[in-house]
Length: 221
Ligand SMILES: C[S@@+](CC[C@H](N)C(=O)[O-])C[C@H]1O[C@@H](n2cnc3c(N)ncnc32)[C@H](O)[C@@H]1O
Image (cartoon, rainbow, N blue to C red):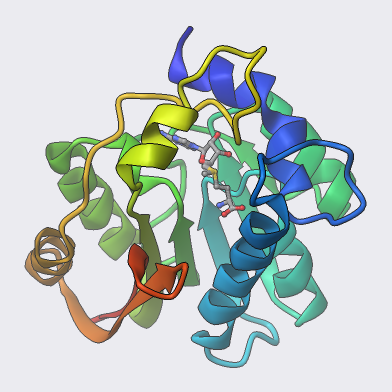
């Protein structure tokens, strides 16, 4: 099954991460997994400048829960995703028509056409050379002084295994592999070599001690 097909197949399930009321199951820690997903969203959104009138592009927008908040804050938000099923769910959630079916490696935007770009939960699916190409393109699309907010995930070995269990066994979700480990130093270096200065690097944890991921806030120079 291709990466895109897995995202298509699991679109409804991804959205259940944001909803307590959903009957979708996320394993024994599901309450915690949902709480953590929303806490990560709160963290990322708290790092953005005032949204009113800002043109924001979100890469890999998935079910659109960031989009809902950004539109509510007054931003002119555009969501991009490679999965048609994700965009269908996203359209229902955000009521937005500014949705683009595209691979982040072939973005159809003009140079200097946006103020803020978000890339949350996508980089693990890309090779280092693809990330370099993406950052260079993002640098082109952002206006000078624009913000690039990037988030990378770190998967612990237990979750990695659980995510690959057959459907009959409860598992959080199928991860579309391969997944590439993301070293914060590599991401920081790639940002700097592509015309960004780094404003913040924020590691965050799960179960208090285990590293879960990193958020980067970079400014287009
Ligand atoms: C882990 S989900 C994150 C969704 C959303 N950013 C969130 O945090 O709720 C990753 C999303 O990125 C999309 N995606 C993965 N690879 C992509 C690519 N190469 N181009 C565009 N979208 C991609 C998937 O379809 C999926 O919707």
